[in-house]
Length: 282
Image 1 (cartoon, rainbow, N blue to C red):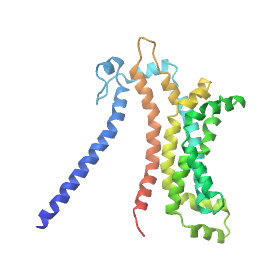
Image 2 (image 1 turned 60 degrees about the vertical axis):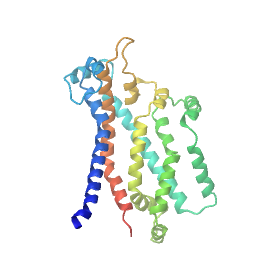
Image 3 (image 1 turned 135 degrees about the vertical axis):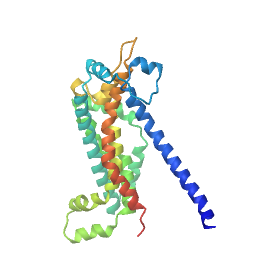
Image 4 (image 1 turned 180 degrees about the vertical axis):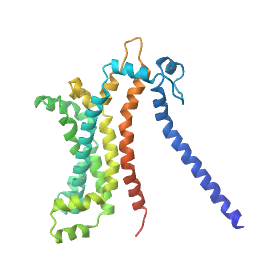
């Protein structure tokens, strides 16, 4: 009876593992196909768009990529500067804003939060023309700063950080720091930020990926080719009207995606730790 009663649970566990393995494979396959196509020729890709095995044209695609003026090292540096700066500004100032909305009791706190939610409703494309005209008027159209500094105002991230602090922050900790003589910024930097590590890691991944993959604003703001980001360089990997080297395009896409994997694997442990911490009841 005991063995028979445990049988449905064993079957359920097997089904769970099968579904999880299927989802993992389903998530990995697009990236694997992209990497495999980076080693194939244009003719092979046109004949069979999907292949799970590498070919022998990797270095040929690399030569075509270099011949098109593609400078992956410069693109990496430019994208890394913009993405790292924008991510750092977004997570720090969004956390600071969320802390002010949770830890302080001031008259306009709720209207201010409502205003932040209202800003979330405005699509970025609506403000892009005015933003470009403003940057042009102050002669900052060929600079990284217009792509970094606006990340300070990230309404969606402020909302996420506020919700996280409401569930995890105890005001007694803040009051204890004040009693010990710590300044407000010391409390935030040394007490609040460690508490928010899982939330910061989660939002840092999304912010970095969004900034790294951003094509629209860098394309209209950056004029000098030496300041082009990786997405701009990949978008310029076009052939003439008769032929496009798809192998080199896939290789460019692969080089663009690699840093995103690195960032995710560096920060994923903090996300997992946050999920585990949230699942423990006191």
